[in-house]
Length: 391
Image (cartoon, rainbow, N blue to C red; front, side, top):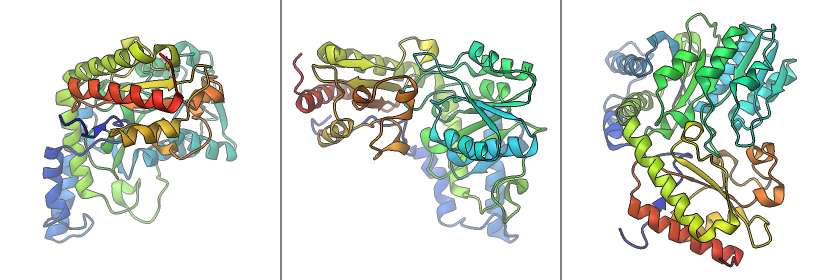
C-alpha cells in the first residue's frame, strides 16, 4: 500500500457498505422506488421486498418473521424496547449498567422521570457484568434487565445467555443491545436467550438509517411513534425499503463470515496492541480485556499518558492521527466533541486526568497485516509528538 494511504480503524462507529449489499439496494433507490403502503404495482414491489428481507433476516436470527420490527436505528430500537416493556408489562424496575451506551441510559433516565426505579449494576474492573451480579439484584418484583452484548468503547463481552437465564428464573425480561456483536457472534443463540434484541445495519457492512428490534412473541408492543400502521402498528413511518433490503444481505454475509472474521480480526487486534506496547508500553494502559471469552475481536481501547502518568489530550491525538492518515476515535462516536470524559471510563473509576488520553481503535475484516503495522508506526509517532514521551 502507499505510505500515505488512509487506514480506517473506526469500524465500531460505522462500516463501509459492502459491494454486494449496495448492489441489492440500488434498484430500490432508482426504478423500484414505490411506497410500500401504496397498492399499485410499484408499491406492491416495495412491500414484497420488505417482507422478503424480513424472512431472510428471520432465517439468520432463527426467529419468526413477526418478531422483527424495522426501525431507523439501533438507538430507536433501544428506546422502543425499554418504553414498550414498561408501558405494557409494568415492571417496577429497570436493571442496567452505567457502562451502557447512551441509547440505553437516555431512555432509562426518561423512565425514571415516569416513576420507574432504575438500578445500576457496577461492573467488574474490566467492565463486564456477571450473572452473579445480576442474580444479587433480581428479586420477586417484575424487572427488566438491559445489558449490551459487547461494550462499544472498551470491547468487553457480557455472557448474555447466562445472564438471561438468571433473569428469566426470576420472572423478568431480558433485553440486549447487540449492535457491536452482529459481525462476530451467533445471533441465533443471542435471540434465543433474549426477550428483545437490538441490531443496526451500518455496524456490519449495511447502510446507515436502519435498525431492528427482535421482540419475542407474547410481548405486547404498542410503539412509541404514532401516525401510521407500518410494522403491524408497532412503528409508524414509511419504511426504508433499500435499507431493509441491504440489512438482510449484510446479516447473511455476517453469518457466512462470522468465524473467519472473528479469528482474523482478533489476530490483527493482538498484533496492533503488541506493536504499540513494544514502543509505548510504559505510558500506555490497555482497557480491552486480553481474555478471548470476555473481549470482542474488533475493539482495542488504549489510554496514552505522559511520563508523569497524566493522560494526553485525546482530541489532539485523534486529530494528529487523522493528519497522519489514520482514522480512529476517542471512544463512542456518539459522544465525539464532548469535553467531559467518557461515562464508561468514569464508571470504571478511571480518573478524569487519565481518561482524557483514551483512544479506541476498532478493526474490520478488510484490514491487512501490512496496514496494521503501518498504523502502529503512525500511532507511535503521533503519541510521541503530542506527549513528548521518552521511551
